[in-house]
Length: 109
Image (cartoon, rainbow, N blue to C red; front, side):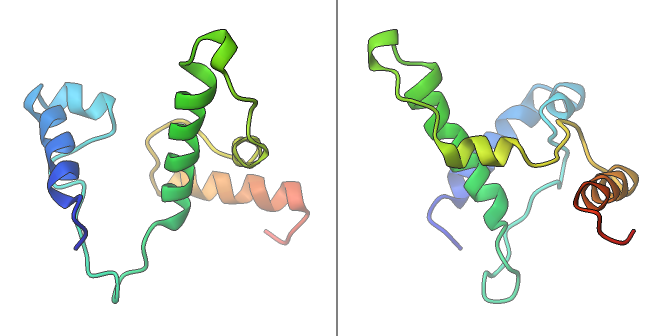
């Protein structure tokens, strides 16, 4: 397990302390996260990349004063161009997302 496990647990538990309804607004549910041995379960590298790029974008592009702002990173722009929905996903929404992506790329459904 990584050194950050305790910090991550604290973030989720903090949101849960505000009640189930408030936690759901942040996409958090009781038992909705876990840590597994990375030798057995492949890590969510795509989510990690998106999180890192978003953090960099907020710290360097959005939050600084105008004179200190950095230009948008091409890598972040490319990620935002991927099909995605800001929503809680279930089996049906993921199915629609895959169909959308396949249709856009003209792949067999």
